[in-house]
Image (tube, rainbow, N blue to C red; front, side):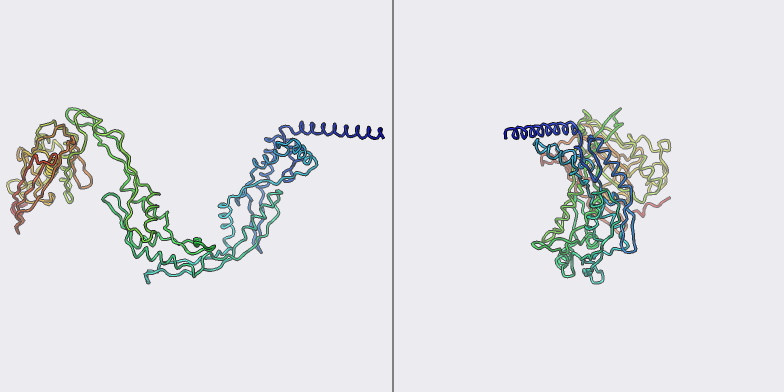
Length: 558
């Protein structure tokens, strides 16, 4: 009996030692490698490190995906690569899954898994990913000749009825995509290119004819409240019925508290974005840093600072959509724009006290002949960048420096001895008139100004003009501000503008008029214009300018 017990003990010891050797052998064999016996889709990857196994799987996948799979339905067939349908093997995750066999935290579990792998019990399926958008897009294109998708009930605007009409729902026939995905998955799991027979199923509409009433009521409410407005500062844009109809978009939505779809109403964000981007062309502007370089009492480089604006398209779309779809609709929406301040402002560029725009004057020379336009542009350019010292008197004629051909001027009509005659520099009164307006609007002291002999259409409103002719009459004013004054000339289209930059000292200017005191049938008239300058709400300066215009008929063209 003792002998038998000894033999059993020896046999057990031998088996135990063999198991220890087997465990050690498996540990050595599987060190940093996929466990012996592990396969992926019948591909043996045992004894391979992760990098080598990944290369083997990549090659096998490449061979598989480069082959065409046949899809058939009745007499139609399509040759397609599985990868073209949006299914891709995730070889890294697949290899990692294989590598984890026999590498758990529990020693006995590891030995068990490695032993099972040794006897062929691990044949893993490849792990793959599905690009649903690509799958849908490719299958829609492939089967476009045999599929007829269901049509949801919807609404279209009938211009004759001035109302929305029902677009009826219809059933359709489509490929069973879920079954197709299942069949494709089975092919990938074993790297098989076996043909797939497609199945057709009935496609039911999500929205039936009786599920459009809420959307119709909402659409009618939106149109009944038009027009809507987009507002940005002093500008506004009207959104009328035609624009709204183009924006209205009917899509299925899940009915509240029910597992069912009804017709919903939204606004087409892509179309609104296109509309807003067109508006942005007139609003968006880059931030501009100020620049000022002076030489001999003139600015050789001058760029005033400019705040930047940029419409926030998405935020404005969301706000506009929310307002129009609200209960009740909100008719006005403010355009949301970001503002960016310049890093360098005007006062940082100089020690002359020039820090802001203190006044501006404009006039329009639309309808002027070519020579007159040339003279206006040539004359106004001579004053661009001019800097006046404090208390310095401005003289138009002196600073112009002549109006002859040697100064670049052309012949054009001027008022001379009760006639209109062509002379070099004709049209310069447009420049002097604009200067006069800038000086008055800036609160400067006018020391010499003469009105035209008769009302000139270029200088509307009448009574706010100033004529010049060498050597007189002249236009003169004094820079009675506390700092230097910089003049900027801007010609845009047919509009001439003079900007006066100086020191913002809190001074406010009020312009009254010009008012017509007397107007006769022959075109003669009398006007009055008043400039009032205030500081701390106290009147510190007042100037009144009377104009006595004769009839234009008294001045024939010679």
